[in-house]
Length: 186
Image (tube, rainbow, N blue to C red; front, side, top):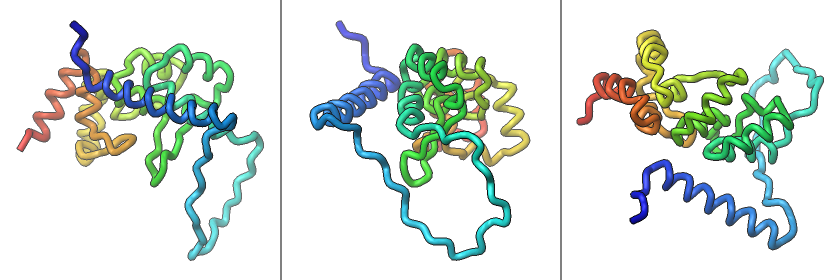
């Protein structure tokens, strides 16, 4: 009898299907998938007085997107791409409408403990969502004590903090219990 589908395996199945479909369509057409376009914008305010100078090239958008997608489920590819381009570690991708996600964010909301721990060991920036998934109760308590409004914070794709704790499984159960004590079910 097959194992029951978990939220994580369902998410991975959907993500893998979407990635495969997009890749298949691109390969069938023998070209890259279409690149996202930047939303139209015109300043209606004075520009900033500071103008940054870019001393290094920007990280390639396709590479950054691939890295974040692989961070949802494929530690080997995360290691491969990070070795290829170390600047990916804290890169974020805007999936549209300001839905920014880093590799660590992807690992956190899918319960990818192995990927999250690898990224953190390389210097990724820990956030409350990842701390919740990893079961780091002291860190979550400290952040929520300092900033109680974080209980309602949303991570990538609008996924709530409590869902990150649920995705952490048994190691994150104390965090889940703590979050539920702060915000009991109606």
